[in-house]
Length: 486
Image: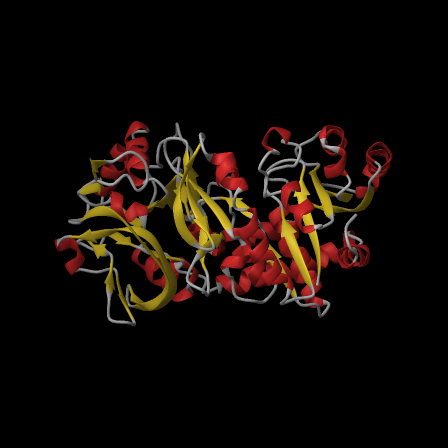
């Protein structure tokens, strides 16, 4: 019942991928492993086997462990909304809203519940691999911390610090973290990993030794840039604008990056398709006129994102695309935006209010406190599918007489325009099904590859695990996890 925690010198240094890869490597060695993240902040979430929601990265890490995701793997999830507030999810269920005024105090009060989840996981496995959030170097956030050193010290879990060499300044990042930490916090760190190295690691041998000498921590290895990570679902929206577009004769599927975009991993299966060029449209850019399909993604604050869509002029692009006969797919919040009206009378996602939708589907939505969280399966576009619901709001109108999907339990979902060119659904993960992707691409005049997305992700996890076995001292990490910290 050991444990090991990876913390980072900053956000997006690769902690989530390294935890997933390490989980798979340990499982492949025959150990029982479970992932854990005390507190996550992300609008990309997944439905769990016990009917709650956790961060998408922890669901991926559960897959790496070859187990079903459970709410104990991410007991506290913060989902950013408009107006500097976050929806608070505890043990998979909505508990309220946190703002700047009560954030620290309310977060710190959750440590006992975090520890309850952690201890339950400990009892079920040989090793718990823990992921930190952000960086312990953000010492201005140390009071009330439950995500990094606050948890590590409460649970007495040894910490490995991850530095990202690709962004530059990794020596200063690791050594600087050592310099700013409280001595008791610094004592929890037992070593470091250098991540995302391009080229020959021997060229960094001197730097690696200098980090060890200046920090007093031992190194556990240098991890190269891992191309297989491109096949993993991304959790943080920070990566979206980095996706590059390559000119070709492939059909273009475009998705605007809304400020509160959520569950954008719904689009990741499209990256498997040789016939598709997925273009993520950043603020300030126009939606490509040559797009065959525009996807409006999920949103954590639909009214705020509806306003942002109009501020960017994307509503004009979308309506022009529609007049040209282009296809449009709305997922969850994007489905709500395609309707005639969205109302939030009780302020579920920000200030109470309502807004006009794009008017492309004859439906309207009223946001309610009840949140649908459940796996679903059925038939859509003439093909079977499996996915999940994760939404607040009731959508009604004559457009629902032409549903997008019919569930196995007899319910219907979503809407399709009379000409079949505008589609809306609450189902997440629908594009992960090869039959569904094939049905959608066939409507666009393209041929799907038929590749199984989950199998591709599983293969990527094995590839990452193999790389970690080659470049990290896994034996030493296992020994560290088995030993009591301190």
